[in-house]
Length: 183
Image 1 (cartoon, one colour):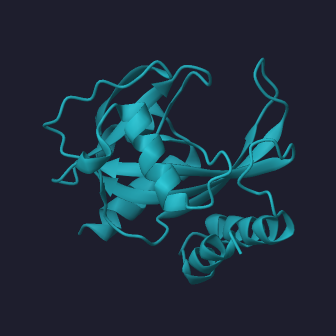
Image 2 (image 1 turned 180 degrees about the vertical axis):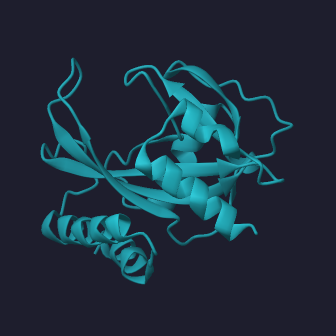
């Protein structure tokens, strides 16, 4: 079953954040109920993959100013039918950063964060949900980050300044996890 790997990852994933724990339950329910959960044509929502990219010193994270959404976010995107969520996250990180896949290191194959967020109607999409599965990655911050045309700007943001770029609860949560993870 193509959803089984993600369901197993979600089953193993534990979080101390109550709001996120509720999202994990909802995401499992969504994946179990929708055979085509990785397909962006599923109008109610779909699984997406994101990365929380840290530098080797764990002092900065990679963020981009998303052109369509006009927000500073972590790299990520649609699965487009690919049920290998690790592959989705690494591919999206490479595409959005302009960094070769060989220079992207998956720090853990286990989930780092889960978030459900609403995409409101816009010129590109109807209202739907993204069931975003996030993994912790590393890129050497000495490498040039060329980015791509999906963002206005991309760069390293000091961990203690993330909230100045975006104060979404999920980014706060990932910032806190990074601090705990690398004490």
